[in-house]
Image 1: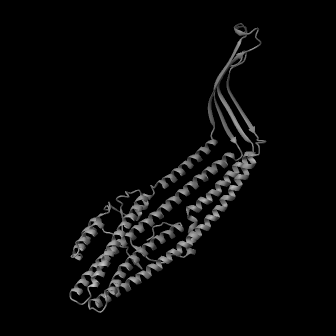
Image 2 (image 1 turned 90 degrees about the horizontal axis):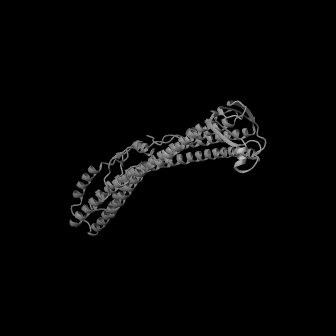
Length: 453
């Protein structure tokens, strides 16, 4: 079963059309015309229309999405910084010293003059290269790479959440527009009943009291239009705030067809949840913790380091000047105050923490999928029942109006039937958009795109 969502005409066309209705159905009440005209123009006219796809694309520039992207880039640079340990360290070093050689015959100036001064100075380019550290650097690099992947997965989580929220607010705005359309229809219906009541009362077929009741219903319809217009503008403003548009003059969502169809089974959707970025982030966190554990265990192992220098060193008297030096050394840690042992235990516990977090995340995803599936089925049933209600209300209204015109039914019966049509039409539009939102939530729970035709 497929039916298009209620359309929202451009502001100028809507205003012209509705003004023509006003002056045709309110010939007896200039104040009613003024009130509804005020409702139409009390809110800023929409600057433009926007599709759901365009709204989702604009939401990707949301500050939350940008912050997540920056975190992922920062993590990538951290990984590059860890890889820097594979390359040699090159420094420029200088040294200078001065002092006395031998014993002084006295103090003061005389003693200094009698003692020959010795001066030493030098400058060189020094190089240190880590040849092998038995997994220290490798573990840190792997942990940094996994941290980058986790940050990227978390950025996709934020993007998917923004896409779902845009979809939700988009259809909420369309639903609010549908309520406005229903309020307009209610004004037209109550005005027609008012005119008919006046004609029947003037001819003596109906009591004059029914005219007062019809005027009361018409006033209530105008109040509902004011409330509906305010809520429609607020819904569009909420959407505009999320996508970075002007909240004072928000764009109008383009009417979108909502196709009613039964969702796939939970069993068919459950395997797709493995693609959700939340699951990917939790799994990457486990691999990151394991890499940090391997790096912590490598702290107990030796390091093989090569050093070299090239430069000039002023030698003592009788010595040749130095121009270069090369060395290689093995460093084996013996005791560091139990820091390494505690670091290994902490890293192993973080692996367990990440594992439990993954299981908890998987349970949450399964529950989210089941609940979203139930909401879709409930919204689908509600939309179908409401469609049947609208059909029956339209048939009942046609019958009661004919009977009322013949003077066989009181005003209250035909008024209730007429208002039931507009109420059922508004509920049907709301049910369809509620189904669209539930369908988007199900797609998000299954790790799919929230835009489902």
